[in-house]
View 1 (cartoon, rainbow, N blue to C red):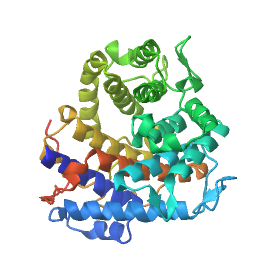
View 2: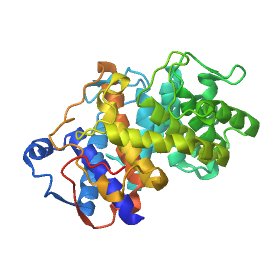
View 3: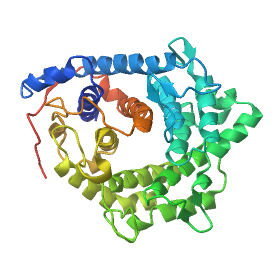
View 4: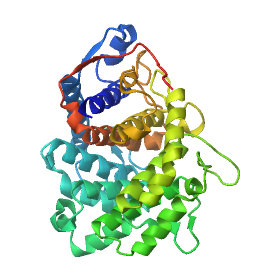
Length: 376
């Protein structure tokens, strides 16, 4: 199992290094002989840790005050959707990953607490809420011993509980989302499941009802989710939706749902593997273009590392290059989302490293395959 996890860590690390642009890496990749490159997982682990420490610290250092919050951090606008919610998750994940609550000489706990309140005041919902939920979870599911929760005043706890309420974009009476695509049922389900796990939601019937509604397409036999019922729209969000429902159901102990969604995940992972480009793109069309497709690759690699029953190819085939030609060394995104996209990426790298921590510490060498190798 550890060897398999190490393989997943390599694919995550290579994608991270290429996408984030570690100095000199992109140029080197353009000329390197990928068939003969050897990777020491311990060295890769150290490189990723150094990158995350340096880049996240730079963002923290550039924030002089959160009252009021700055319009820009490291030159990037912070006024886009879920900017501060994304930052809460990234800081919390890094704190968990690095085993410290101090970064760049600053205590990240009060920073996260304030960022959550900023997101709430700005009307953040959906993904902003999920990132804040994950941030709180990183400090422990027992709120009696959760450093972030304990740092909040009674009024701030009420505000944070409001931020973590899926009812901000999901109506349990009508079972409808607030003008959002179908995959947001997965977002609502993950928030509710974690809320219940931490005791912020105590109504089990509410949680089960939401999970049943969120999983409806898959429990009705669909292998791929239509993200714009009844029109028909299929892209990477179908895979993300399925993973979200699986994670939420597993957290909530709903084995009936995880069993029902397993055929979809197996089929969707096969499709993803067939479509995965050598440069790391998982789905190169529609809403999947840009940096998000690289992030998706890391998320999926971590997911199947944790759930090998959904792996679409033998373990050795995971040792394939993610950025062999330096692709992805620059990210293209809407101006207001550059800040949140970078922070989401840093958060994904940190979270996937946490999921595969045992494998990443294993000092093994492995040869990367020269290109896509299908074994289906």
